[in-house]
Each structure stands twice: as structure tokens, then as C-alpha cells.
Image (cartoon, rainbow, N blue to C red; front, top):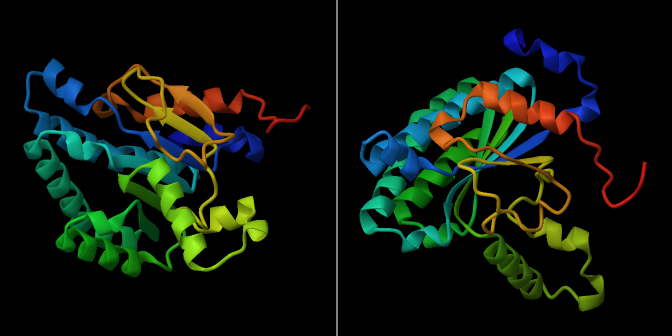
Length: 241
């Protein structure tokens, strides 16, 4: 693990297995650095790779990032177009690298609301990495927690499942994250302290960590601080210890 040898000293149960991140502050970072918003989004996209590498080095197998919400369509058209272009470029650029490094890539969200060429790219990358299992990287694109639950309910109804047969397990099996463990730790950058319709079902017992830094400035050292903070907490899941 190299520079993260301290992780080896932590009991397994003190280390999160799944980290979810709300990537916030790209636009404000750009304004603070007197550059275009597009450069802020580019810096944010590049930082996803940096933080992913750090998690891999720490031995943490799951990362889910909030890349584009169902509400983000309300942004200026030039912003939306650039973000979609960045997502396409990321998928194309990282497909070979993901295969080489045994990383599975998946996209959460309503894919039918995306452009056909982006849907094709997503399908290609998901299929190409479907059997890989060293690291699991999820991108939430055109994603909203309420919308995910709505779509899950529609699937359950379409399958004719009776009301008395609907359990938490049944609902969970129809969510976008059906075979993905719930996040242990949610990180949000830029100083905002809300979850903004992200993984509403899955975050029920997650630990939250809020960083004042804008996402492009969030470093592996900041990630270390978040992990160590998490390691010092007691998770009771509604019970007592």
C-alpha cells in the first residue's frame, strides 16, 4: 500500500468498503482561479482519477461519484453540453485503463434520458468491464435518489409482485445499486452540508464527512483525513454497543 501503510494497521471493520462522493465546487473553484467553468469541470474530472487511485492504494474497493443529477439539466446549455462531452471523453479514455487494472465501471441513473451516443458508450464500457473485480467505480449520471426509487417501484409493479411480498430486500434488488453494498462513508466537498437527492435509500446508515475544499482541490491527503475520521466513529445502526 506504500504511503498508506497506516491503513494496514486499522481493524478491517474500521475501514469503509464503499465511499460515495458528491463532487461539489467545480464552478466556484474556476471563479476563484479566474478560469472558465469548463476548466473547473475538467479539473474536477481529472481529480476523480486521482482519488480513485488513492482508494485503490488504500484497498477500498467501491467508489460512487455523483457526476450529473436529474436537476443538473436546469443549468446553462453550454455547461450541460460540456459536462456530457467530458463524460464521453472519460469513458473512452479510461476503458482500456479500466480493463488493464481490473476495474469495473458502471453508471447509475436513468440512461434513457441520455443521448443515444452516450448510452452506447456506457453500454460498451459496462459490458467490457462487467467481469472485472479489483475495484468498482460507479458514476451517477442523470441520477436522482427519488427518481431511482420511482423507477424501482415501477419495475416492481410491472413484475406483478404482490404488496405483501414487497420487502426492503425486494426494493433494494430493483434499485440501480442492486448488487452494490451501501456506502459506508459519504464525502461532500465545497462546504455544503446536504445530500442533494443522492442515494436516498442507500445512505440510511452511512457516515457523513463534509470538506470545505472545492472538489478540484480535494487531495489524497484530504481523503486520508476523511478515512481516519470515519475510523474513529462508532457505527451502531440504530442499536447500542
